[in-house]
Image 1: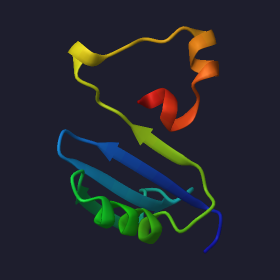
Image 2: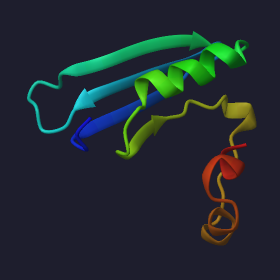
Image 3: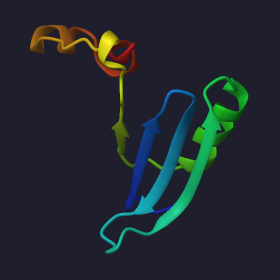
Length: 87
């Protein structure tokens, strides 16, 4: 697979939506799209391998609930990068 893919990830309350599209195409052309329930770890792992079988960067949309939203300082964000910081 070429490195001209865009990867998208959107988390909802109960599922994760994974998508891969072609970079530079207008309109955006989806190559893969899959939604999996958050409670099914095996399905989630399989979907990530199937949809994100690329070395491209991913774009992630997180919609945290306002009551659990924490705005980190720049120093805190540097100390907790990646998934650890999101948690």
